Amino acid sequence: MIQVLPLAAFVLAKEHPAAQVPLEPSTALTAEPLTLDNIPLLGYGTWNLKGDNVSEAVSWAIQAGYRHIDCAAAYGNEDKVGRGIADGLAQTGLSREDLWVTSKLWNDHHGLNAPESAIDTTLQKLGVGYLDLYHMHWPVTQSSLGSRSVEYRDTWAAMGLLLEKGKTRHIGVSNFDPEQLKDLLNHTSHPPSVHQMEMHPYLQQNEWLGLHQKHGIHVTAYSPLAGSNPTYDPGNPVQLLNNTVITKIASKRGCTPAQVALAWGMARGTSVIPKSQNKERILENFGSLKCELKKKDLAKIDALGKAHHRYNNPAKAWKVDLYVGLEDSKGKHELHE
Ligand SMILES: NC(=O)c1ccc[n+]([C@@H]2O[C@H](COP(=O)([O-])OP(=O)(O)OC[C@H]3O[C@@H](n4cnc5c(N)ncnc54)[C@H](OP(=O)(O)O)[C@@H]3O)[C@@H](O)[C@H]2O)c1
Ligand SMILES: *[C@@H]1O[C@H](CO)[C@@H](O)[C@H](O)[C@H]1NC(C)=O
Ligand SMILES: *[C@@H]1O[C@H](CO)[C@@H](O)[C@H](O)[C@H]1NC(C)=O
Ligand SMILES: *[C@@H]1O[C@H](CO)[C@@H](O)[C@H](O)[C@H]1NC(C)=O
Image (cartoon, rainbow, N blue to C red; front, side, top):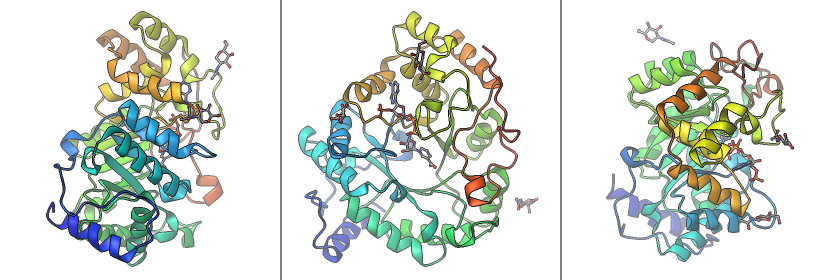
């Protein structure tokens, strides 16, 4: 695997001589790429990064210490994110292999043939020779919205070939439900390395998380600050970061509420990928690595899980059932403070 990576980078550079990012795809790796055993548990989310300073924000995140960047074709900003990655590496003197870079295949590139062109575009925009992780963003095919199709099986097979070609070091899924995950496992010899899903103290999904741990599938928690993302319908009387359980623990431990939420996620073994475009909050969230919670704090946060709420659910818009059997299926959130 390691030997094919430089080749992939080289091929990519030749195919795209006009790659806009001045990050040289190295012909020899200068360090061992990160592995799943040392995936940085704290990552930086890039959905909704927009406007003039997207690249600055990504570069700043790398300078602040983040070594894991979560991207997606669907976020429409991979070119700017890529420039930020190049700048962050230049500013810190780090190399590509010091970072864990994730991206995701959008619903319009499912099937046996399309995934390779999708990853090629992403690699070019991000200005990297390989990804550390490539997710199938949803178990949903754009062309068959309205039906629960199993085209994800073909898509997954195609993603397996991207691994063999060295274009990504791991492949993963996102937003699968239990039936879809089990079906995929029944139809592949290559289980996903990572499952990225919504997860936070208001959506803990202990049993579902446990199933992944049993199968050795790492879980990445998205929207780890719960309803803070303004594109979400708050749907919830008390924002997580204003919940007194969280704010009390924060002041006791000398942390901020966001740091408490992120530290809780990492304490469960999941990686967390908070997004912020704000310099101070980028630093604040990185500081969650220093936020030490006691067992009794974790237990208090666990108790918040009784009131579960899912913020990200395009099922209605796409007219397709999602998250069947998972928490939220009743769509109700009752707050137990
Ligand atoms: N696989 C998927 O389908 C999927 C779905 C959703 C998200 N994701 C990934 O997960 C990442 C994170 O999720 P998310 O962006 O939905 O939500 P999030 O990271 O939980 O919250 C982001 C929001 O919280 C604000 N914020 C950040 N830090 C804060 C702090 N310390 N205190 C108060 N507010 C803070 C941000 O505003 P400012 O920017 O102004 O600071 C932003 O509005 C995404 O960026 C994306 O990479 C993946
Ligand atoms: C981006 O611009 C916004 C608005 O001017 C500012 O609040 C934020 O701190 C900037 N972020 C970075 C990383 O420069
Ligand atoms: C997966 O295969 C097992 C064993 O054949 C079977 O019992 C199970 O129903 C299958 N699950 C799905 C979701 O297809
Ligand atoms: C948290 O509460 C304060 C005051 O109680 C309020 O001003 C603020 O808007 C709240 N923030 C959120 C995210 O709900």
